[in-house]
Length: 206
Image (cartoon, rainbow, N blue to C red; front, side, top):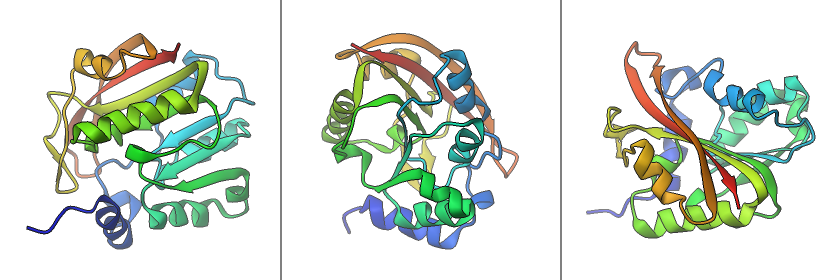
């Protein structure tokens, strides 16, 4: 059996499907945006969107006036699509092509956002690598907001088996180095009129 290559898989997905044709598509990422209002994230905050792909979150953050945004994704094609959509505004964003499981943050961030990247990590070594990256990449007092499929959500996404989480099991992954702030569940309606249940948790770096 051929060994799974995450980067190759996602490059193929983004080469063959439009943004509106993938289950995670959100024209307005309401849940993600709500964190910025709830925690009163200042416009000068250093923000990183992990697994951001060609999500519209960066568009809304730029429109709101945020000026220090990094988008990370394993797929260069996803980032290229986002840059093409943004045009000249793309020059205002830092773009990183890397795997979140072994990402070496080049700076300290104030806000780390991840909607639906973490649940693709199934190996314990990948989970440890991700958490260590978040620990290194967030300043003390920095915020981490992470969303994954819940135990009521799908067991697979884009043909890949994912790891489902409850609020407690997600909090357990970040019990060292972080204080848990809140967790809640959200139903996401896909472009195909199906519903996926997510659990979101927020943490503070200690």
